[in-house]
Length: 108
Image (cartoon, rainbow, N blue to C red; front, side, top):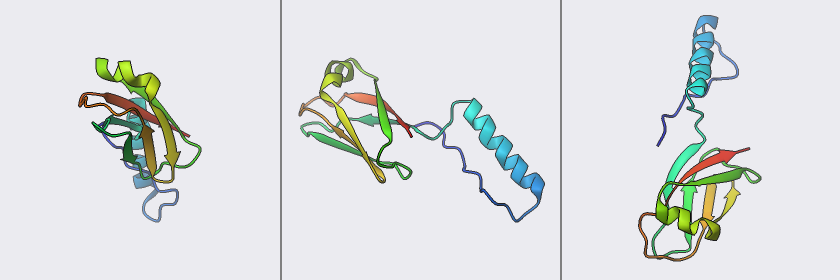
């Protein structure tokens, strides 16, 4: 699981310097690839559905998959995603394999 960056409040009632510091931290995190939209998931064995709870997921988002094991690469053609509010659903074939691991990037 990648490091999660803190969100920056749109409005800040405290000192402006603190708001600028938070903005700089968020920008620096983005520059390091910490954009909070990357996840790892292993498909549930002997099942046809694996769900990820993602607080900011919305209908219309796209879930990009990257196989992270040979077993995952072999089954990629049999996986399709469905993104709804708060959930990323990975529909897949049933297999006893326990090593079908994917990287998932959620894109708006």
